[in-house]
Structures are given as structure tokens and as C-alpha cells.
Image (tube, rainbow, N blue to C red; front, side, top):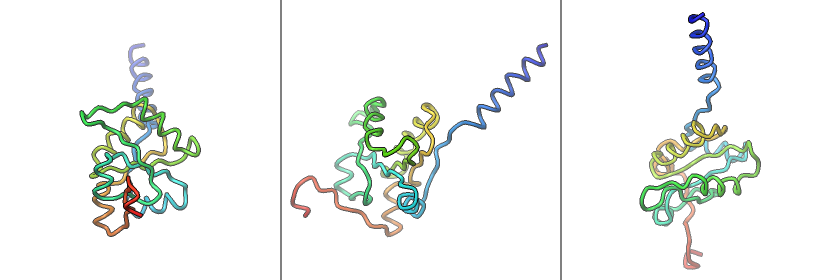
Length: 145
């Protein structure tokens, strides 16, 4: 009886692992392809000073993640993300400076909340720029026009 119970629980754990949602990493080229061919929502999770310093990926949405104290207001951030999505199953690609923050947020979305179709740009906007892809200036004033 103990053996059956043990095997049952092991089977449950194995099955749960098989169906666990994982965060995907994408390259700059994959991001472009997904944005064009699959209507992927690109969400830049950096801060306003970072957006101004480097610019942003064209057609991306800006949605700050961590505040100045390193706190992530998950509920508020998710509500804002849902407003940006055109459908529940729309692919979401997270972008930060180096891939660290976007990876952390992506893990929360996939592992804790079970969201599917969540990716993050491998090595962040730094790799995007290093690979020669264009950025759009982040203009907070009319001086950028």
C-alpha cells in the first residue's frame, strides 16, 4: 500500500513538472519575428531614466516593474499588463537592461501564476543595441520631435 501511494505521488509530481509553464528566452531576431508574425506584445520593464538613456524598441510598451527600493507591486503591474494585451493568449516578451529583471518577472508570471506565452529578451536591451538593432528615442518632452 505504501509503495502504491509513493508511486502515485511521484507520478503526480512528474506530471506537474511536465505541464509546468516555463519562461522562454528569445534573441533579438526572434523578438522581431514574434512581434511581426505573432502579434507579440513587447513590454519594457526598465525605469524612465533607463528608457531615456538608451531609447526603446519600436512598438514596445513601457511598464516599469521594480520601484526605487526594489519592490515589485505584482498586483498593480499585472493589472496594467492585462490592459496592454489584445488577447489572453497573446505572446508577451519582457525587456530590461541585461535580462535580469525581465527574467525575474517572467519567472513570477510563468512559475507562480502559470501564464503561458511569456518570454524575455536574452541579455536585454544591451544585446539588442550591440546587435545593431534600432531604438526609438523615449521622449518625455516635445524637444525630441
